[in-house]
Image (cartoon, rainbow, N blue to C red; front, top):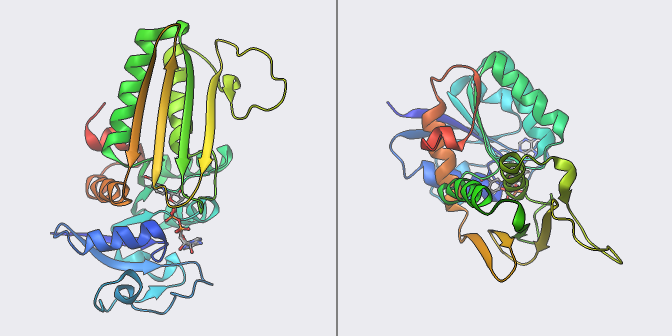
Length: 268
Ligand code: NAD
């Protein structure tokens, strides 16, 4: 039997891509979709909004209008909205996949606490298979090259992206910090003016924004006489949407708790 899915932010870039893929996948059915109450797509047929024939599913203006129909909520919206959806879902206990980025620490902590008590959640700042492999490769490289190499992360995204640095860049920095026993205090987000010599412990995180770049992450290990660069380039949002659907199929029926893409992809 196909899994019944609800898509939050149905008219957004990710929402539309996910809905298109759901209609191509026999293991998952769209049973509900909703948007921000002021979004012009509210009240329209989902198909009309995502470039498909009419589906008979109308975009509603709130999660509560559709939540009872579904088994899993797929949410790529906005940090405050995803937190609100998790709060609502604490009562309904549906599985959740949250791909939203830009959370404040306390917001994500509250989502995790709700999930641990009430529902299974897959949360990941990047749902692509390649980036989840990159986390592993970065861990191995940091372990191997260790303290003698300066580590810098450069991320690039389209001009519409609202948060910076990307959640993926932060996750990459966390993987490196954990591997080398460093703390977040060593993250260096910007450099300007007479900044003095680089410390060997800092982990640089730099942001580029422009055009329609879907998402690029480079992790640079610069030593004396050589450097190693690990690069991931997403060329289409489909890679994230495919990951989200894989996560949705995996998370239904799991015990309450917080899972990530490493769990979904069996990379742990
Ligand atoms: P977008 O702005 O195109 O879409 C977001 C949609 O959410 C909009 O249509 C907006 O109206 C809607 N929304 C906002 N508040 C809402 C609410 N309260 N209820 C319902 N809908 C609401 O952005 P996007 O490019 O689709 O990205 C969305 C989020 O996903 C961002 O945080 C982005 O960084 C993240 N993202 C994550 C991954 C990943 O793999 N985890 C990949 C791409 C994007």
